[in-house]
Length: 252
Image: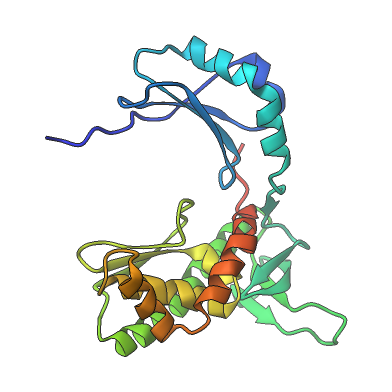
């Protein structure tokens, strides 16, 4: 039988929620027996899941009854950091200052080392304030792919496997994934993490090419090729969510 799927997410328009500063979304699920509520930390959105027989009015009332809980959860999410001139962002685990150079710069994107111990390295980006953030994003995607390509080849050689394809995305639910046909997918945001963290995620997905599960044999493979596995896992648990703060500002 075909697998039942969650219906598409729809926005919930209700003036009572305008002050939340976050979208409220509704998802219908055929197997849902009751209304449930969660706050997505990566997308900064309120998500209500409801059974198919419930209407949108019930969803709105449900959110309203739990509005204090929603506000508390939203308040615990760090504010987003859009790519703008002068802001700081991490690159391979180290803070860098963004410098937008305007249209006259010859090099699209370049990294400039700190001149003194009291200064920060800088990421110089050519282009106007409207164009530079997207150019920076594209560059970060390319940097992430280069780093992960190297990691996947290295760990693949150690474990005797080879990935069919490697893709970089802006996925919010996981740092990496491995399909049954040997294709690997990773979040570009890993390029902001320390190098050993990115390398751990690369090793993790490569190990799935041999063990498509999370059993003892799988974890033994990861640790075999990546001795800093536990340190990297802890880093992602503590700091990983912070990487979702950075990015191109949504258009109005």
